[in-house]
Image 1 (cartoon, rainbow, N blue to C red):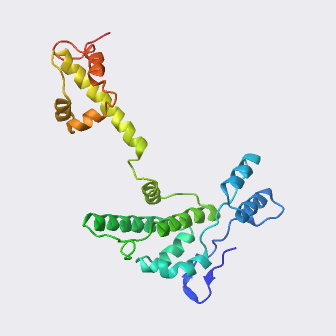
Image 2: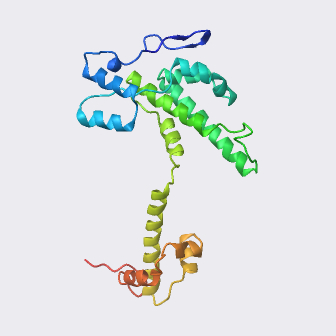
Image 3: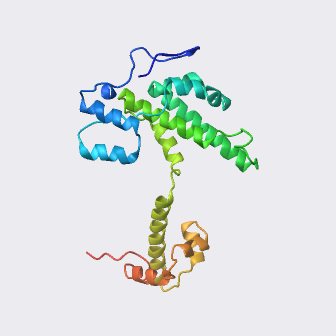
Length: 246
């Protein structure tokens, strides 16, 4: 059960009226029983077992954060220029605090990238960059606060932060999808050129598509560019215009 104040830390005061969800408080309630079981053993194995056993039952999953942890983490939080009162608001599930902290963490990550680009080395060891472990802990605090307060609204600022920590906006699958789309475009343009009686080259395709010739070549690792272009050429007339096949 969360309390309203930290002993000897009067700066940390949570909002009046906001308390732990009832999920974990009623021994006679199956919801509370499941929540308590998970909190005692917060493993994915147990969570999946409980959810599969009773799919309709809500399980309150918060296990990270709280007044005691905030008191302990205060020096680490303030070491990297973050406001402990703001983090207290996050642990109180204040959506404005969640948005603001998410933005500040993104700014810290941008600062670290800039330092690295400018040739700074060992920025983590020198305390110039906020550690990933602290960013991740704060994210977990935000998510868990939403769970225990039953306020499951996730601000978009937190979504961007989560996505960045999970690999950014251009992960491997996105890159592969984009490469496939560009491969198709290259084949179409190549087919258009072939229909005019010319032999397309990677350099020529690169100029048209705004990429390097080597990039176009990488789109066709099987070496089948001309074959793909020849197949597409049947969709164009001798002047390279699309054929109307209605």
